[in-house]
Length: 179
Image (tube, rainbow, N blue to C red):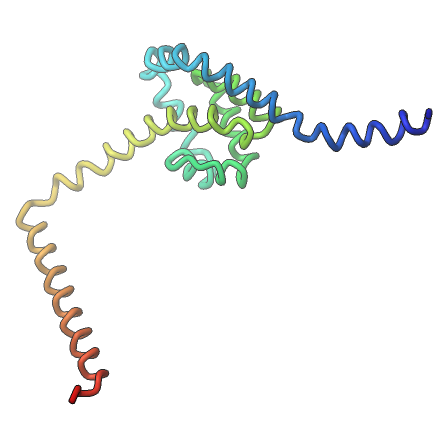
């Protein structure tokens, strides 16, 4: 009996406790969901002072994290979990709203098991990033005159029409005449 309880039983428990993280991660997600309203209020209050810090952290992060912030996906969280945890830790350093509990849960359970809160924080970060990129892209679009734009569109349309004619001619040449 001593061998059974000291050697075999702990191994059996270990096998069945592998899913022990899931309920704890679900609880962490639930508590985060309950505090989303407070996090939103704090986010709106600190928005102006956080923007330069968030943009700086974003620019210093890896390409994988940048892609996840722009288009958050659970598969990306699984592939780049260490980079996600590092990014969350950087957000904790600047006291980004909601990042501390998300970072702790992500470190403890993994970003995949707490994907809801991680994606929520990434969405909040993306509001700063998208704003930054739109400001950079907007002036070149305004610089182009409407005449230049219509000429470019007409040229593209002519090219498409020419290609379609070539394709039709090739199809007709490939088909034998019908009796």
